[in-house]
Length: 276
Image (tube, rainbow, N blue to C red; front, side):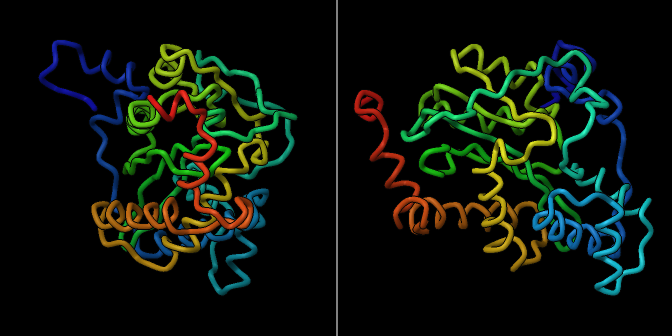
């Protein structure tokens, strides 16, 4: 994160981690209890219908007794970092100057550990606020390799999760993400390039390109997050950590022939990597 005692200027440090300088000085206003509840409901609706925009989400909220305008729904969606996914003209770049890489997984058979890793960020509602969760997952085994929580959508917590995964589990052949600015930043892609990892990115608005981690979010939300109201980021970190322990080591998956992600990961890891 930013070190105010460093010889590097704040501007240089912010540029390196992919955040704006103004965010270092801005103190956000507390979110109202009503907006916290609306954001939790929006998150549930969006997880079921990722192609819904602000108008249709507003209609869903009204059907459940919540009177709210479309503009306010759109504002909350931007705060949560979500938008409707559908085929549309490319109206904006993920981030000015960031390179976007092609999608490499089309028609590829992915059947062994460390062949392809994927990453994504999701919104985590809490009793009095929210935070963001990033996870690195092995595609073939569904194993969660590393994860981080943050109260901001910056690049540093994503880079930290990536570095931990590489240190603990080695290097994948390909790393797949969406085109979010956190993943297209030099701070993130630089780690991949330095380690000789091929970079793959989803097509714009194509959530199915990274469907494995979308399924993980469904499990995390409905089996853990929505059942609780975390009182703090520390509590969220502890409880989500406990859930990932369950997910990796005890939760059996139909798609894995009723085996756990941990068993499949080590069973399909090439022998030379396992020996190392």
